[in-house]
Image (cartoon, rainbow, N blue to C red):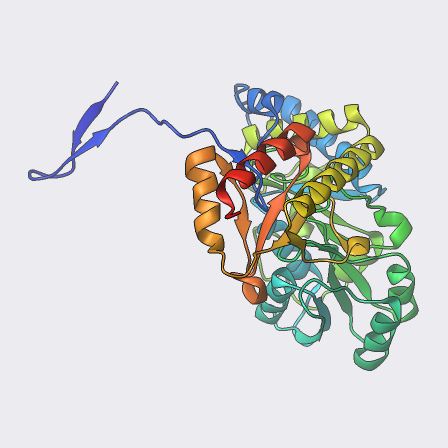
Length: 382
């Protein structure tokens, strides 16, 4: 039912019920949420200090430990998008003057550099061309040179589609007495992750990619080594909202109020994690790999070139080089408006050079690949 309201004596605002187009979201995120997750988000809310809600929080923690393969006690969901969890990792263990070494292989490595600098860190960087990754020897040399308190790496670089190998990096960090901080935003749920086995001390992710949930509740985890550094701070955590010394009392047995949690978003995240556990995390990893290999073959059959070497490609996000003479933005817009399919463009060094195609969570299905490829056959010049 349409309603008219007055703003002032001369202006009136026409308000209609919300109506949004249906899209197949095959970009870098968000991806489409699972129908059961959308149903869960409609569950009537209870209070954020209700014992029934505390039970939901406990289940989220246990399920996150499972999908991340960690026993970390402090494993929670931040009330915010992935960027809030990203900043929480920096805010809690970084003090002014701390040397923070960031491995930059794309756009989100640069974001870590920006955040660490805002908290007063002495930020150092090592860089690779966008689409490449660091070797263990390169990381060892960097640790020897900079002797950081924290090494920050992006496991799944959303801007390039490259997967940074992490095997052995945690051992290096322990050898040099630093913490290992890892971005798993585009890998959690769809790419093999073994936080404890790899010796990762801090990690963060988001809800809207491999977990098939709308954005707004973001996984965060902290090891005992990171917690120890937090406890030895000389100064308070500069960000009240992200302070784990406070949040741990809300998520732990104390249940001390910190903020009003986004209750329905936690319902949705809990259901998304339950579905992932029901499928089995190894099965999810295998499904993503099988479907992306099918996508790669279909794209190459169209004559398109993939940006990242096969060994380091992500099963959740693929970067495709835009052929010479093709208007990449125009093709993406045509896919969206005529076929209802969203794909992403490039960021930073890859702006205008690649498309980014996501097959994440609920969207990682063969029929979605077929739908996209059929549309590309229609819109790409012969």
